Image 1 (tube, rainbow, N blue to C red):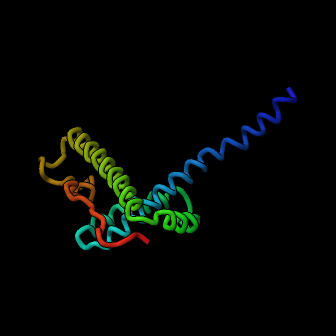
Image 2: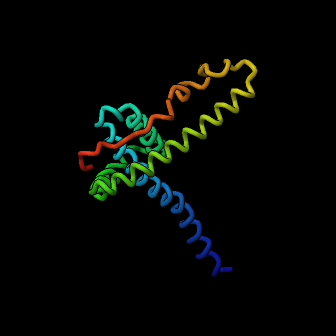
Image 3: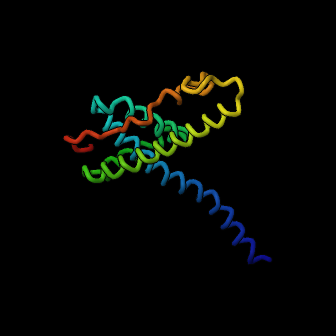
Length: 150
């Protein structure tokens, strides 16, 4: 019995570390997305969609804890992403995530509109659903082609 006490104590200490480690990995990925989308927002053609995407990732980061914790992560990931190829790869990953999430929300919106008998006729945006209906998913975010990431 005494042999189990140190093992149980070690397990109790180790358990909270798993979510923190997962958050650190997710924070890094979200910071990289925020950085490449903020960079892409420099292109006037991509600005609106890139800013929306950057705000999405900023919201995810803020939801997991104080923003001040991100300073070393932002600096580190900005330095690590030091080539156009790395930035492009991150951009593609992030754009894919955004597209997937938007598709899922649109499907949910359609499902809920179908369950709501007072829903507007098709083609009219649902006032209850808010700005999600105003996003044109056919618009693609393109990174600037002539500049290196910082």
